[in-house]
Length: 139
Length: 175
Image (cartoon, rainbow over all chains, first blue to last red; front, side):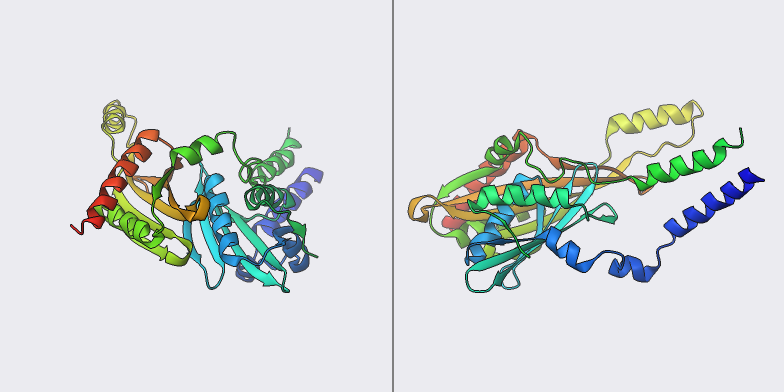
């Protein structure tokens, strides 16, 4: 009896985990917007948007990405890394006040969003090195 | 014995659920400087747009189609589809089929991607540096992805830049 119950429980659990609705998948509703932004964003003490975008592109190349597209006006860069997995990344650069730029990165690993802080820390560490500037936590 | 069934189910769930990003996916690899060097050449000119145009011409020479370009940031991305069939795999598949092993999928086609990034470097920005990177995805006869990788063969980059030097010369001469 006990075995049967636990089996039913496990099966139910699998269903719950497996059944994210399209709305949840589309909008990633579970993720906390504020927390995600703080993980994915850093501020740099520069106002040179073009140079920052070019440095972002160079950093992505250093990390083994192949660039997909870039837009200087909008300030976005997208790139893909293939290494037995598909890692897609978009980085945006926009002004913050009159003395800083905000750099935000978001990544997708195969079919999952990357929500761990650590990969982003590594990315910004590499970017800092190429920018010759410190990345400030943006909140 | 039956007790193990739920444990078994749970461990499967855990294993499939734990497909997380590798630790080194976004950190600089020890080889990154060597790879940067292999993938980069500099040309003595101040005209970044001209170099970028030569790169576009070269990608066309190599049968690529341009997907995206952004002159303000010095970027061109291009791709092409090619056959990925290779004789060794096909021979192996035929032997296995002959031995009664059934049809084995073999590599069929591949998407090859290239991106070229240019930027001005040096004092007074006297040089334009060109960095090209290639990658490919291979599908088999069942439509499954069998390889997805960066191409890091030095010979590929050597040939690319030999051809680029030629293309820059040709465009300069307007041929």
